[in-house]
Image (tube, rainbow, N blue to C red; front, side):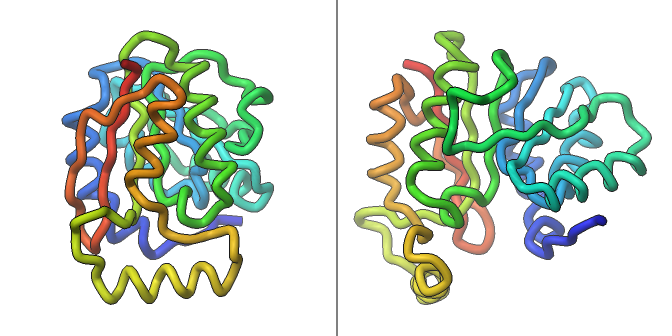
Length: 199
């Protein structure tokens, strides 16, 4: 039942360290596209004052999250919810103090990124609370690494709707939904952590 994502083990400590700078001290954090659930377990452990809400639209991912959660000793990890980023009008959760989305935008259609910002605007409202994205992005004026170029080509070969997104396009999408980027953290393995808040 449990799935394993090797990247989760490699990047979780770096992600946790930067999240500590951006997440509220307490409250409810919604994780969109939790995948295997390994990040959810790790981050719930490292932020015990935060209630962590994992989610995913995939049945196998949900089963994996539940299996990991069964071994978790803490009380701050909720049962996963079925949330599809492409359908923000159907999100069951209506309020949160932050939203985290790790490694989804490049392995999903553009509609998922659009839906993520639309859903975040509904849930975070005008509170100035963070929507935090993690993953690879192309940036104007920043030299693209050969590994990211190859990664992007491989993604598009698997699904033409996938691929590494231009940061300027993400910023524009954010602005359309009332968000402004407040932080850009350089992360290991040519990834970025981007933080958006309601203007």
